Image 1 (cartoon, rainbow, N blue to C red):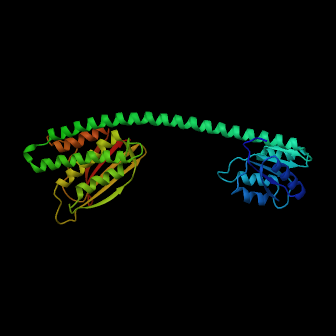
Image 2: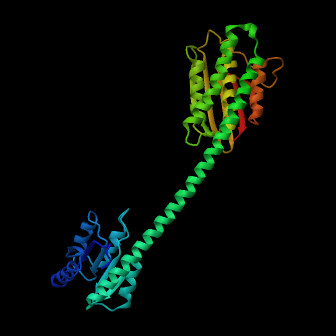
Length: 340
């Protein structure tokens, strides 16, 4: 007997044959269970996993072939070897069983040596296949771990580069501002740094650390700028990811654009409202802000206005374009298209 084998299930409707096989295998040191038909065996196989199934083919209630077919349909069930016992010598019967996944056939009557040889052969094949699968799985895991390490190294390098780049942006904010403005100037810088930090916060919360959910990013900036503003917002914001290299100018652009709009006075006769839409159409990203009142800002001609110049800078970094227009009975519409 193969020393590793412990459990064998015998499925046979003929009680004398079933008990004879069980007694013989028990004397050989196997742990043996029994079933009178395929249905009973199928029920047991769902909770009791033998190392090998020895089954008759022709049985009432459920035959051996149907038992094998139904067992193979059980999700996650181990590929336990099936050895069929049959009095049939019809080649069609043998082909049917093999097609269903039978591992071997023994034609009745068979000797004890033939049964032991069949068990040992199929058990060895089964565990060799299992070992090969485990080795392949381990190789795949090692390969994936190597890729993860390489990606991790790449991400760390990218983050170092982005932090250095963003420190340069913060420095540029101070250079563009006017310190003589006092608290307003400091608050402006703080809010711009917040917009920059929001990009990284979203990146760090993503699985790959290299992409940002634009919907979450926009929501964070809206919460920051619109708090206590008294202005109602209508938000139609889709969630899609941008590479962090695009997300940085995108987040800063949205902050600057919304901030500039809020600086313009709203007509008292109207309830101030800003509609914000962000969505993806193919490989084009779209950001639309509609203000129901207030002055239009010509974002395409910044002149000496450093704030509008920042908007243009970030649009250029996104390889995008902006249109600004007054829509009768609706308000002022700012629309930005950019490549994704």
